[in-house]
Length: 105
Ligand SMILES: [Zn+2]
Image (cartoon, rainbow, N blue to C red; front, top):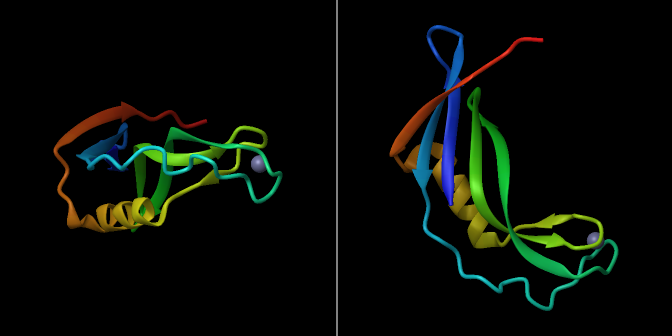
């Protein structure tokens, strides 16, 4: 799992992404679980989350989530959410950084 913190660059031409590698979570957490909305089967997938923290956009990639095969509802394990919260609050340091172009409509 990698975390990418985005903030406006000085030039306003790009967003800086700060990446953090997070420890992997155990698999098969969602095996046998069913969706609480439609009763569909929950399968584990790696998804990308986005949050806004103190004015910065944060992308969290490769997050293990339970995804309903029928309606697509996503579920997150408590320890996964805890890891995300701790990471976006700056307790972890970025180990890589990239700049992506931003286009105004
Ligand atoms: Zn469902």
